[in-house]
Length: 231
Image (cartoon, rainbow, N blue to C red; front, side, top):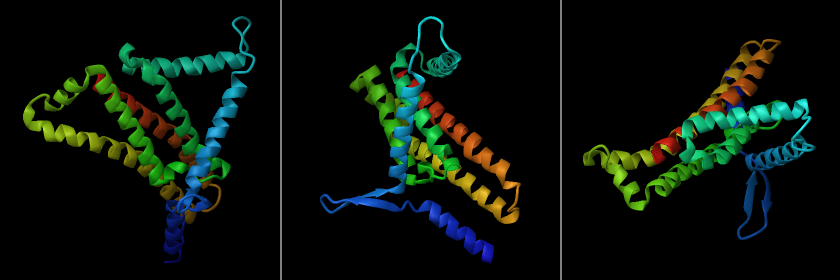
């Protein structure tokens, strides 16, 4: 009973995104912990970007530049393989989301609460991605053909095709949120049952490996949805 209460308290603590401060405008705008951590991630990404692109050369390139170019090329090739030439303009957005999610999912190792444990954050990311998906479809097909595409393959399933617009962001949101929260639940259970030594490698797995995998899955599914929209 003692362990159950302790676990419940920790779970509620993780689910609640505390207000860090309030901006005194209108009736007061509350800034939650997940927003502040997101700002920290943004600063980190900007600083890292400035540092890693500093002193890049065309000739006599350094090992750092070789690794950087290899990583970026692999990511671009992967996304281009899915989207093709018609969807290459969406690759920069997907790369940004990928790097943000990698940092957001793994920032727990630095002592911060991952913002992706906040349902509001995952919902916002999912909504942004689905808006981009539908925009890509309208831009490629035009308004009339985009509307007509809801009747494919037969008109009777039009309501289901329309419903899919709302199901997709919900699916992306709950998949990301559920996996990150699920990792936390498993880790807490391990810490309760085996509190010494054993949790360390599991923590590395859930905080790093699983976090990176979830970032990959989110971007992969978004790119597939875009590909489907522009076909």
